[in-house]
Length: 204
Image (tube, rainbow, N blue to C red; front, top):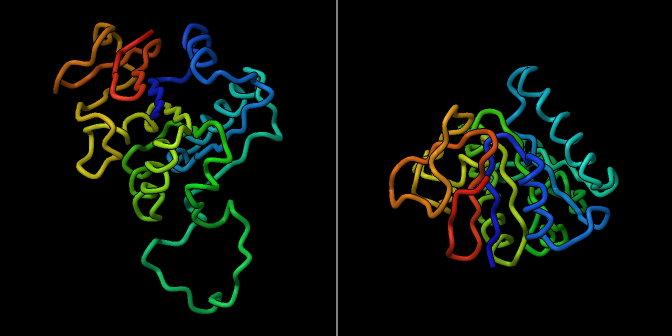
């Protein structure tokens, strides 16, 4: 069953409690694959990578259980290798993971930054199909800012988990409760969208 927690600015204390209730694992046992690819364009965005890793560790997740998966290292899905065509044993974090490999992790985290760049990299590498297969198999998806927007109606080629546009870091958020049918959703930094199966709600 799909489980996605789409935040504006990461996990507040309330959202952290909600997260642990839903993932049903001790922090020290959670294995994370962290995708920083939205956060590479400037130092302000790169600073968010450090903050995201710090916050994961501050939740009790072990450093050795966090694997950084930068999509910029991956070849495009339609590219035919030339001078490296005989290389077969490429380490997993430097090639496209399979659904089975990704499902060895418990949590997939996308940091904030430039949502258009992140989505472009997801689609360029073919990671979109791996994400969808893994999430359907139970991998927990945690989006922060751009990582939330790429799941929604902000882009025609998004991951498509909701049709609504998501706007993040808003002073006033859309009221909590069931998601409005097609209207844009405005998330304050204390809010998130929770998707569990076919249920979609705004929470804080």
